[in-house]
Image 1: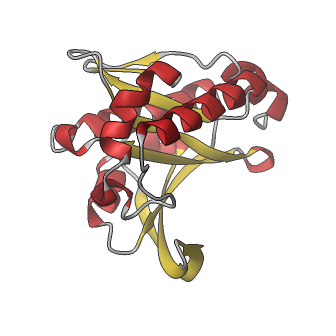
Image 2 (image 1 turned 135 degrees about the horizontal axis):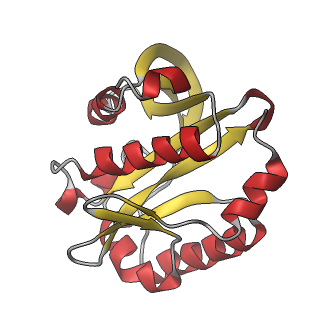
Length: 193
């Protein structure tokens, strides 16, 4: 049975908390402003993303206020990634979009560089994949990356996704055309990864 939009709206209007050994994935809050600005201000973080670095904490606060409004309407599907040990928000991970008639979704993530290299992004992505397949009944979850972002592609492959190819200059990002790679995993492949 296909994922229904009304079910998504109902579920994500009170975004569930997900947990792993080292992380808590919960809704983003305005109180996360300082933690998010810490990484969102860095050009190295946004180099391969569609958005520019945040220029000041007020911009981050405005974004988090907007996210709160989107949660209330149930049409935002991204979690704050919180380090259990420190209690700090260290990034985000979640679904960027759903194609309900086809039971597919796209996943995205970003992590504060201070926490990279510890397997935390992999842990967060695996938990969101579990949720997508087990709770939402998705058939396929894909992720996209800009050509050159080899670290992101390696993460996708680590969680069991298969590289499917590049779409040449398929997105205009920050004023230039970018080649976008796609990796994906199917439900029956997930438990074997």
